[in-house]
Structure formats: C-alpha cells, structure tokens
Image (cartoon, rainbow, N blue to C red; front, side, top):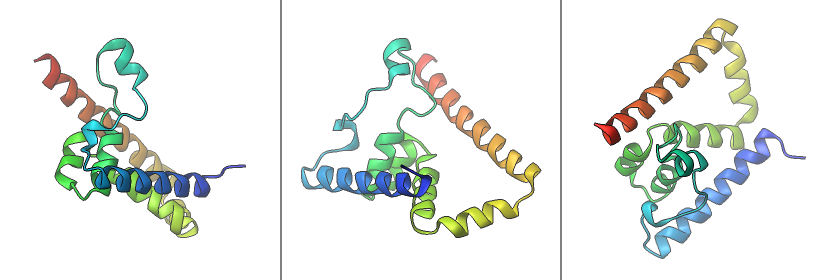
Length: 127
C-alpha cells in the first residue's frame, strides 16, 4: 500500500501545501495547530519532537533561523524526505555502503543529539 517513497512524497506535498497556506494567510508557524502533542498534553513537558511541525513549516516559509530555534532536526527530516522522495535508490545505496557499525553509530549519535536538544528545552523550562 504505502512505502517509504510514497510516504516521503506525501509528507513533502502536505508540507508544501501547509507552507503555501500559511504564507498566503500570513500566519506564523506558532499560529498553526495541526496535531496536539499527546505527551505534552498529558505531562505539560515538551517531548523530544516538540517543535518539529513548526520548524518544518518555518522552513517552507524560508524562516531558517526560526526553524533552527523550533527544532534543529527539522533540516534533517526535510532533507531525508527530499532524498527519499526523489532519489530513493541513491539514498539507500549510500546508506548501505556504510558498515553495520557505522550505521549503528550514526543512529545512536542521532538519538543522543535529539535527546540532548530535548534536555536543553526541558532545562530552559524548569530552570
């Protein structure tokens, strides 16, 4: 039914559509409410991905500094979506050229950096 290429393309189409919509209506990413974060709603603490939607919308509006402020990983998400949507074979071949240990290290580093960003957000809220 859906594969990673189709999901990447769907993500980009929806993202561009929301970007056009918010630009035409002159809305900031803060004013857009798509899906509430369940983790944040229950705990009143931002989740590791909080700000990602606003950051991706800011990227479509060319507000790159705001996007970095909302969530630095948004650039990686959009880049991976573009790569998977338009260059799936090349992206997979590049990924498979890495050794298993290198791939594991990349994933672990990504998780550590994402959790570090999350800890900085939590630190700014509580202290």
